[in-house]
Length: 496
Image 1 (spheres, rainbow, N blue to C red):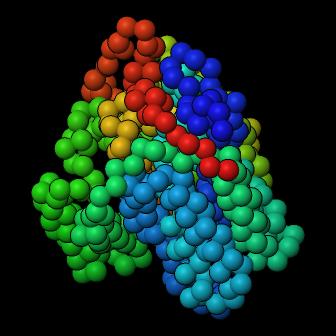
Image 2: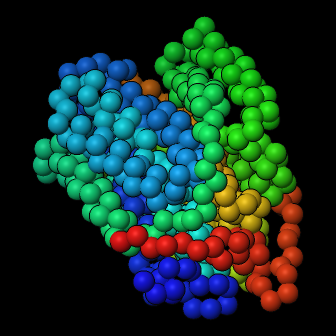
């Protein structure tokens, strides 16, 4: 094996011949995992009939994935730093395939929930992929590569909805999960052949107590947030879970500050660059998910309401699909801005674009092309922000902490989406209009949610202003310093 393949190029030299293949394979894996998240959306209304279970129980097919992803992301990220990022990436894909097969064979509620939970355990694929890129791609290509990898999450989500709707409309619903399993197997084989393992491993003992504490705290918090509307926000269950989350996470923080090898290095997390990037990620996660709640409902509500467009789920998917393509294109543009001005500037630009998209949506929401335009503008902003976030994180942490740090940042975005779902749900449930005896979300309710989405994006912009601006050492571009060149200079043997 030649040195060119055994070790990534240093900053300023050309990338190894296989680096483009590594980026493409990792991006494909990210798309496959994000497809899993939208795969079930077209059949959610039909699940009670398909699984012969109450709607309140079939909702766990979505909730189980959310909880499993929240638990797995920080744990798998840390294990990637310890035992190998490629190894944990392959493990995550195996869990995705296993969960897909279980769901494909399911005809009742319990195996469906179990399979969806297994699928959720694969959520760390994108942060692991970004961390692998830091170790295998030359510094001059790192910004573009991480932007593409980050955008894969949005691309898969955007393209997955029309694909899933088309399959569900024309074939048996089990085909959705056989498709997911097949794509997972393809991704596994490609990663096995093209993606090298990193030598940046810290080893040591896994923080089992920390992982259990964080998992318990997150599950309590997310259950309270995601199921609060069903149980009642002032019910004993919701309030009890919320209180438990506060107490458990406080105890977990106490433990992590004293652990020799913590699951999450809270001292590193408290660095201004990491702290404000993670806070901005929560705001962005909130903002970006608001669109996913508003646009599909506007498209599907009856035209007789005066603001609904009366379209099918397949049309919803086709309207949102261009957003994914815009996201991918804008990721390349964001990489150029990051390289010239730094990821902080890119993040701020992206947040403003997202806010402007929501502002436009308040004014334009009466035609299908209005919603296509709005989704593309917001998608452009997301393409900017998704590329900037990992660069900011990697610029502030040691290469040995890249997996854990990127996974924690992904978790912050997920928390933002969960809060968005809960708050938007409350607003739309309170601001309703009567339609043939049924209470439907009102036009003003949608506008309020969009205004809050714009406000969250502006909050992300404000938080980003507190991120310290780093000056690159002589001979390095801004992005090479901000994204860190340490990992690109480490040896990384290729395993085919």
